[in-house]
Length: 459
Image 1 (cartoon, rainbow, N blue to C red):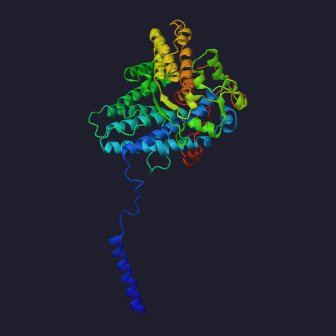
Image 2 (cartoon, one colour):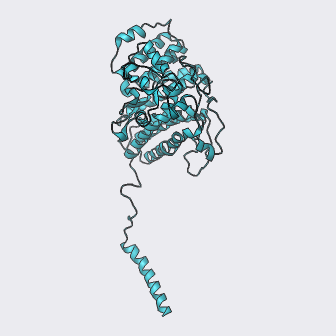
Image 3 (cartoon, rainbow, N blue to C red):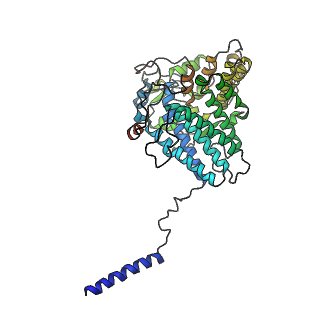
């Protein structure tokens, strides 16, 4: 009996092995809704949505615009940020998303595009990578990059900011070459930023090169201005080419600041910014800020924790459901030109670029030229009266809702309108983000740095 049982067991096992290979579908564990090989046209919009929401969203814009006194945190976490209480734990989300999602997916896009000779997809991936690195290094200084996306490296080294800037320029140069390649095998598709227009991506790359060249003015001196100007002819030529991401009106598609205001509502406009706009009768006021119940525009004194009903909330330009977040605009490019020409002695060129920068910003924000206001407030400036402070201050006004003003303030000390914040831990704003707490905990290579240590280019 025992021998027969053993024979039956062996026969059963053999039957099982043979029968499995004959009747079980080998694709049984393949989920048709989660394909193993995702097309380039599906990867790209996912990256862009993450870039739009995270680099153009609350973890960057709300915090730095708080510090630059466009807005003021009036309760809870936002009030803490306004008074410079900001820890590594507050940075975890931005840091992790940038590396685990944006940069990682961009690498996948670039690698797959390389395999398929999809040069235009590759170029777009390189521009998005350079942009992301620019945001990260301008916020943190030294960051992981050269081996950060290698899954076998558990503790990536931190590359110097100087090397990161070199890598960004290499990426942008390569992107321009790839986007110009006439042997492209797969046409762009799924592009939510430039609607598959490779020419506009090339202009965006040149515009970013101009920004990052000027960013090094304190370390490169006159060479920075020359490098910035060298990229102008091939960069943006109108607001139609502005680099950004537009959100939608449905709940899951709303802009980051709109979602934040709906869910928490602990941000208001700062009196610093509102008073400056009101004093100058700036036509952008009603777009940048929402009127109070009484139809007026009031800002919260930084750090004062104003009553929400008494002050203006962020306006439609930055907080509408379908607001567009900007990464680079034509107006900024004109201010770059103005600063570079001003510092190289071309005062006539600087004046023309300065006036154009204000005009392009006003038109982009309000949808109108507002010629009378420009004539009374901007076009009456002369070569003799134009100053660097005017240029950077108007650039500050134009770049509301972006990271760049935080970089310009550290680089130039302008605008000078910022005031001491009530209850703040410092009389001056922080000069960088603290490193992500998770990176500090799990990566022994993380440098020691405080929020008031300067990044490399901040001299």
